[in-house]
Image (cartoon, rainbow, N blue to C red; front, side, top):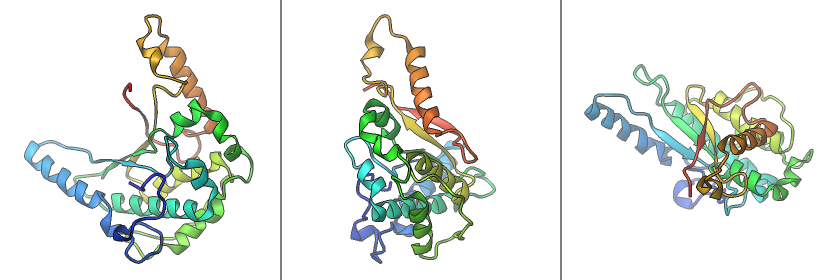
Length: 231
């Protein structure tokens, strides 16, 4: 958990004050060993699933975080750290060491209130390339870390989404991941209660929005999509 709208970690999880979550303090280091113990007791495979925020659009600070260079750098660095930690649990019994569900309510909130995100759709509105490189250069030595030759992304919301997908494929290639969206993304979830509800139409509208953002296109496409339950 990156902290959503809180990209500056608290001192207890950022002991050296570099602005990044400490690798050793990440929750996955407690979650995965516990899951492996459950597997032994249950006698069957159990998948550790971590919910990870790199941006929080539901009552959070997604736009300001995307447009603030320091915060964007920190979010990139935190996510890389989490990816490396998850990948470290791959072994002969766990070819897929963990699963990530990314950024709950981010896609749904943007579709629900699109006018708040027109600015980050514009060219050069999000400093994706510079801050991704800055995060990689500023991170301390971490298990499994190497500095790749980075692709070039568009410096906007579209490039940001592709950069997040890239980070998983580059730093956690065996971790399954997908983005989350909401049944209320088309405006409200009340349509579920109507006798003449048209789930196909709502599903098509959500798919069209996600396709326009390119979330599941490109070289680093996710493995699945997650929906929340009705609220």
